[in-house]
Length: 115
Length: 111
Image (cartoon, rainbow over all chains, first blue to last red; front, top):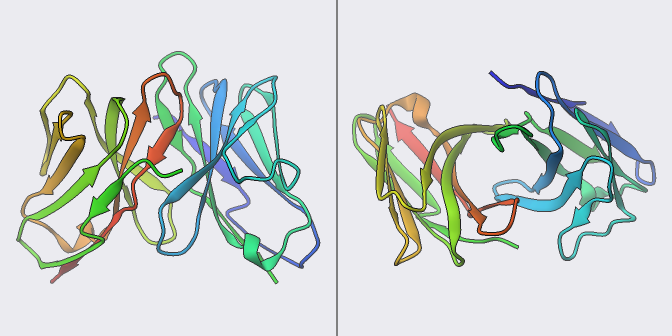
């Protein structure tokens, strides 16, 4: 079946540093990918829609300069949390939409802890 | 923004019993999906029901959809300890690509 890989699966960083999270569709092309954030015991909140070759569309309240999204190829989208702070600590999950069928596949998530 | 709400927020039952979770949403949809998430893990897709369907079955899962009430239910029959997880409904609104999740139900199956 279709697989979406996220890397790293967990990361710990110091406050003020930037962290990049990758989302790859391993065996299919994904024109569109989505980034979600999930705080403990809460639901997934959509942060942005990432489209290959164009600028991401951010949800209301999500700072685009804080959460940089790059979708440079049909199989890779990256989320960079810039100048991370402890309140950015969360579980970040991506999903990739298979171009041919529109099906969505989710990654296993990346847990970010900012000290 | 969150599309819908789920109830109950938490449900604890004995193994072998049936578990029912409900989801409500606000806008017209193309599809409604249910996902399971084990603690600290990614999402597992359970079932998709289209807006023109009213009921769907998959193994021990039964999903209903009432578009007039903008609500759906997920029934897990003969629950097992391994069913312990959080369950989320998700909808894709008409005209939009994105999938929006409900608040989720934390299900605990007691052996």
